[in-house]
Amino acid sequence: MKIALLFSGQGMQYADMLPWINPTNPLLLQMQEQLHVPDWRAAMLDASWASTNAHAQVVLTACALTAWQELQGQLPALQASNGSLVAVAGYSIGELAAACVAGVLSASDTVTLAGQRAALMDQAGAGQDSSMLAISGVSIRTIEQWCQAQGAALAIRNGPDSAVCAGPRDKLAALENFAQEQGARCTPLAVNIASHTHWMSSAAQAFQAQLTQSALATPTLPWPTNAGVWVHSAATAAQALSAQIMQTVQWDSCMEQIEERQPNVVLEIGPGRSLASMWNQRYPDIPARCVDEFQTLEGLQRWLSRWAG
Image (cartoon, rainbow, N blue to C red; front, side, top):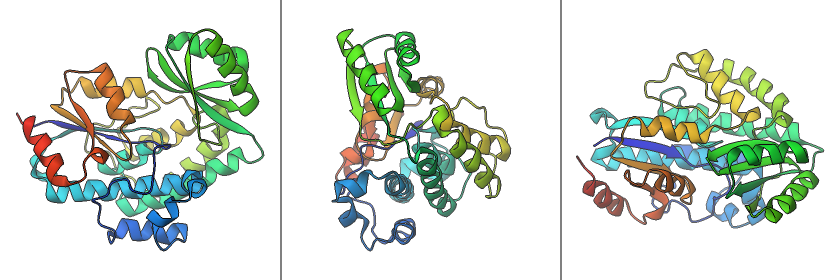
């Protein structure tokens, strides 16, 4: 069976996500120490704490990698030795976890870097009243033109008629009103920085400096990157991971590159199921599920077994 992995981005995290992960996993303990909380699930019950950039990015990264470790350990189809993985990609902060699974970073370093990334982005956004807005139902070219006209920026390309925009909150409010008047669907996101835009340029530059001081390696798995950078060395891995902070995320391209490898199934690792839903809408012949949909690993194993080929 050929499997592709997608690692979730920020925005869907909640206290009871991934109920089957082991609370004593070293990555979760490291995460709690970094965030100075004794129990991350209890901390997540506070919506304000859970949505804070500096908390969410670390929690998501540690939980995603913990889940992956446990999936490998308990599900034969996902064990590294059988060569079933054909590609891995991550959405926004999820790209750090994807890079780790691709062999670029150690798990512990990845959790540390998630905290550094969040801090640098918060510093870049300090003093700015910014946010993000999802728009769908019109062409990506039209959305981009609307952004330019309203003083916002295209942050994420999700598909031919779906994108996320970012920028100053007042500019986004004007963009939302205009887009709705034109019949587009709009969803404001609970994010307080203009991720993946030029407003994050100082964070991207500083994060690249952090990455060059880390022990990065050449990926051992196909890893379509958010910034469209082809990774063939540790240096280009650092470039890809930093560039996506200030450049439009090319998620539509990531999905295309994964589909070209013709996996039997696609698994989203993280909370919610937004990436699996996007995949199923675009490629209905290749089934996708989010591991967060399963209460037990036995249920996930039964589903995987249906698609073994």
